[in-house]
Image (tube, rainbow, N blue to C red; front, side, top):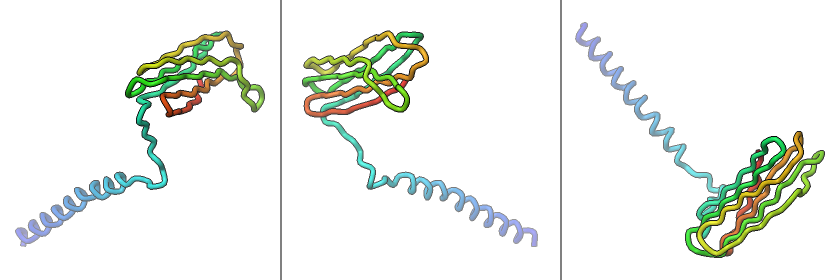
Length: 136
């Protein structure tokens, strides 16, 4: 009788183990599915494009870097903007360009403390263009 109970318990425990071991596989299957309505952006020329804005005291430092997969015409346009009420207005714009595989720009501007700023950047490599807006 005890041997029979031990076998039943062992079979029950094995069934539970199989059940719990298979759950992560089902969950993984759901995670792998991609949303067909979200397009994946792939660039044939642009390798990376990054920008940052830091405000320290009354100085804003604007930074942008563009890298390409091959030597092409590169261009970066940075526009520092400040917020007045609910609208953003341009403070200053800078443009840099060259032919090659990387272009980096760093510019500083005296700003007012207590004012919100953002940096809008347009990156162009060959015929490809991407824009970013960054906040401090």
